[in-house]
Length: 247
Length: 241
Image 1 (cartoon, helix red, strand yellow):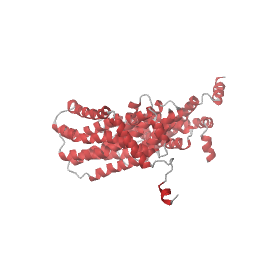
Image 2 (tube, chains in turn orange, yellow):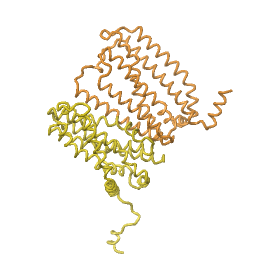
Image 3 (spheres, rainbow over the protein chains, first blue to last red):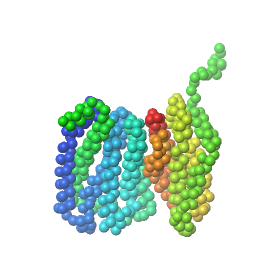
Image 4 (cartoon, one colour):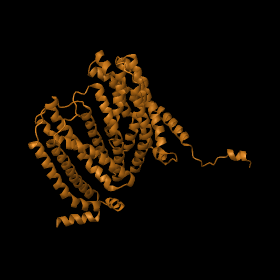
């Protein structure tokens, strides 16, 4: 266990592991996501109330799911950065933050597209929508701070502090936004009460959630590899790697 | 040497207690701030001007202002605290005082707490004192104004405490001002929601003690946690220089 932990500190070791892992992640992810999407979009039964427009949940729910868990993963990595000063943890935070922001945006966008036919409006100041929007702001803050500090070490630790402060605030923001919404408007739209889904609907949904997780894993590995190559460009193993790639 | 004199003897190298250091730092911050009086006035003027924009820009009607007044005042107060945050550590950072503070034997988070307290006395407290006048100008009734001042009294220290984290993180960066707002505004949202929510409840005649208690909980949470984060951020920013 501890040996693995120490090895994880070495960017070179991770680079090799990622190389071996990535094809499997990509293959599994694409297979699951395609299965889930095709099943969900083409074969799952229509919703008795919303017709076909509900089918966007096969994209919306996975991206919203991942948008939130990416921030949690970042917080764990941030704690590792601060406690053990592990380089790789910071590489993870930096590489994954834009991905999380894009996923959050995707969740908001697909939600808006779904909201237009269902609620009759693109945007509503609903608790869930608003807290996702704030999550997007938090991602932007992390990205902006990371870009603003040029020194690698202090940038890593400053971003880690910010991510941890954010993760303490996320539950507070979530509950206060819910409280604010219920104060100002009665629950016209019950987002939380899903119609009890038949298996033909939730199985493809689960498949696409898992598929997107795997694809995220692949993409995170890819971005981390790129970041490692940039950071370690002066080391011998990177030079050898590049030369081997050229010949 | 008798035991009496020995009891009165103090070694020269003994360090000052934490509370005394905090008090000294607090008074020093107040003193230096009062030597630059215009800097103290600017956030207050900004507060008044932002509030003035709303009747001009949206609607001067009494019914609108009564409804939106507490929100306008809260947003304006939040923005002026945000603007003043840049000064919190900037001067001490520029002249090297901050490095000396970090080297002190007293725990850094206590010193940060003292600095934030001074910052609140210089910016948050004047905003609270100014709020009743602006409250009358946006046609809030007497009860609402009282509750508004109470929420600002509890809420502005939270704004200063959370803001100190952002100020410490962005210390010494090029575009610190905009970046600071970007980092801190999402974290201010709960305070804003509960601050205006309390006033809205008071306007409807509902009891406000529960809301005030929740805001007090925010304050306790911020006092206990935020100084640690600010202190950590200060160390990072100083190691960067």
